Figure 1 (tube, helix red, strand yellow):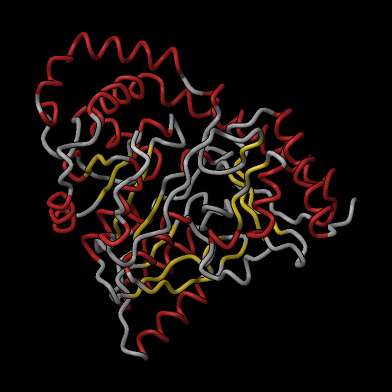
Figure 2 (figure 1 turned 60 degrees about the vertical axis):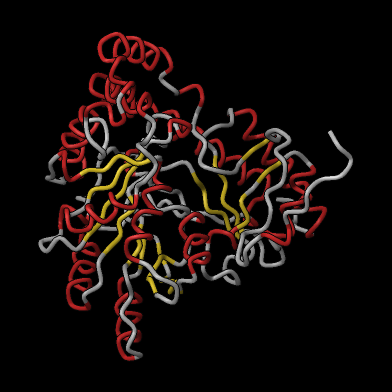
Length: 403
């Protein structure tokens, strides 16, 4: 290696995000990201599925698209047709589905189809960081709608739509995670879904429905998807296998009317989402999805209980949270004196990684003392130890009282 290196800095265009840091390995107590439970990963079933499908269809890997066309492996889309009908009441055909490289690519394709710099969108006030960051980088203005224990407040949505109309602004879409919202874990009731659809029709604004966490409802029962309830086709629906099977497989999907789907398909110039992953998922899910997911939910629910009990033990009333209805996250309010962004570094130095709340909200001042904790990938013992370490940092750095 030479001592000097080429300076790329003068060549970088304006608007790039800050440079990434080198990865130095996972910390001891990692409550960040959307990782899942490694002990619940159906590894033997995936191994068997990979062996079976490769022996049967492996030579189709020589063809872009596996002889299924650009929308993705046909058996996987066929599985999704049945799953979406049974679980979400969505009646669609395989040709209404586009397989993507995770839900993040689905987000990018929808945004690339609908958004231009200077546009406005409506989004839940506390929401998925990936969605918020993408809007910021695109130069799009997000209008945040507050949530309560039943998800997006429809009265606030109606007021925002009317105010934007008064200003001559027509939002490009209403983005919502209605079923196990990230980070709050709320589920939008049917009545609110109906009113959201009514407002969408009245104001001529489509709905972008992100359903990536819908399989992880503790009760196993969910309301119909907004896509299923729409009578006018003004909903684009995305989902993922990251939370139900494994995030590293990077398989998501879009369900959309063809006039929108055809535009997104034209933007998907990656020569196809990972083929082997699609084949293995289709083979495994057709036989095992319906039995795997309930077992996964039981394990995740037990970890959530451990996390809530540990927070109560270590923080007492200083940590406020609602019991979420599903998912892998807990949205925690710490005392007002805690700055979650300033908590991040000393917590990390103590071996605890957290997601500061302002990174998951368009109302950063309101989320100043909030943190998002992912409990899925840690053991019960690690959850207890990690919360204890976090509490010690909060007491030392911010004077949070002991319970």
